Image (cartoon, rainbow over all chains, first blue to last red; front, side, top):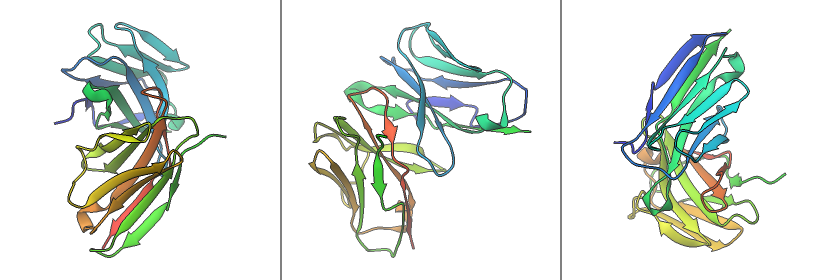
Length: 110
Length: 112
């Protein structure tokens, strides 16, 4: 069982559509990070959210941290083929371990 | 251009052989992580170090895996003896405490 559960595991959409990826846990995190990984590369940080209820925007990407700091979501508006990749959430858990969710594989078709 | 460097990028080895993977963290970072990524399990934390001291290696099979940081510029992950189930991509990442983790490009290991 993953400490961080991501859903859905896979998402295939057409260019221009919107999508939301969820990251849920029963644990409270002091901060939560979102990464994107492309084939053959390591994950790259997109954003860190720290405060419960925090919303951060990165161009067409909107990240939200739950009020109780147990969950987070990533929303992409008007997705483009360049958004294709594996999206990973990660949280700092007990013992200061940076633990990753299972990831959501996003495919945006032109 | 600061980056985490991992070697080798690819490794094919026979079952039973020793495998050593190396990582050069970003200068100034005090935290080093080793992760293993497979399609089935996703990114699993194997071990991590803070200021070169191992803080947690509970995710690592102790009988065959070992991780060390002989100095601040080198982290190693060894598998001896290797088994086909060890086939995966192994990532090293470094960070300043628990801020942004910078990942290397990974070592793709195939054990036949």
